[in-house]
Length: 448
Image 1: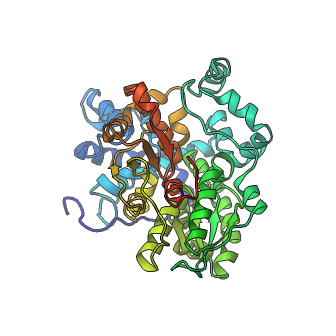
Image 2: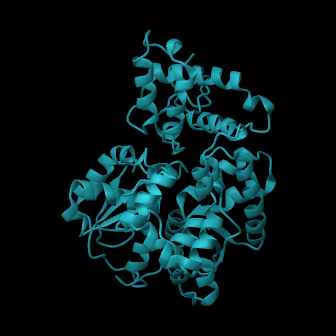
Image 3: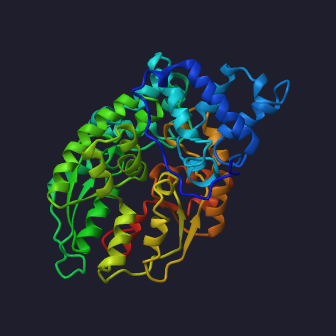
């Protein structure tokens, strides 16, 4: 038996259609097997809060071993896993093909799937995961929705904390009256025929966040690609299902995958590349969907054709070359490498892309922001989320960069909150952005 593996990690399909997947005795046995390996290793102690909780649980038991820990006490460990995949991708020496066959995030997913099957998921979490419904409703009352969810609105945020358990100070995504899809239909962009990459075609998968919460990311992407000779279309057949995955609703994810892949597959057949605007969504299309529905040819085709937006711009730069015209930014950039961008195993493409901007310093932050999707906004988790992201926020503050950037927009806002806690005055001179927005600004395509 080897002590750790030097081979590239591989992942097995998620066996969620097998009745044994939901067998609680088998699940408990696997939890104990994996937790015992983690107890003996402890390399992941400084990632999310799951591992400190697990180790404290064991160390505080009568024998200081897993055998004296009650299985009902495993739930807080599971609840604090944000499915970031960093333990699997960057820390654990025992992932497949090692014979220990350890996949901590997917084991946490299995636990949640069992909870889902038993009807034990919370009402609020389930409602937050309905991103398409929420966005479709909120866009009609966007100013009111944004007023009610503003951190400065002590009345409504206090009510939300008491009734929905959403922390009163957690920054929440804003909504827009006009979605990215509607904006794309309203205006066409002239494609730069003299650009080296002229002739490329890409369909932009808007994602729920890009469509409802931050259409500016998609608009900046379209402008940058048009400048570089790329014809683009914007589509949004539905959410990728990441919020459902967090709740253990694997069947819901599989259904979303079927719907979205059917739409995107037509564009692939017509010669279009697929670009996902948010790293979590790119991860779902590339990796999670094929593991949930293995052998599905349409999902495999989509996975091979999908790019993260930063990855796509870097691909143009390395092959055809980017169009001329970028100018230095008016300040340095603190580039946070989002966990779900790193989990795509494509390298730090956001940082690579920003370094294409002339005479602009890019400081890389390679630590977790702590946000963890909907997990980080909850009353019981928000302060822990800030603690997990404290080092990343401190490093961003130390960089002195006015731009706080991440391929995960939620992570950027969370880091800004961490910076506010450490130096409220310095936070006033910082602003958050997606890296593609800074590329658009360097080209003179964006104001401010």
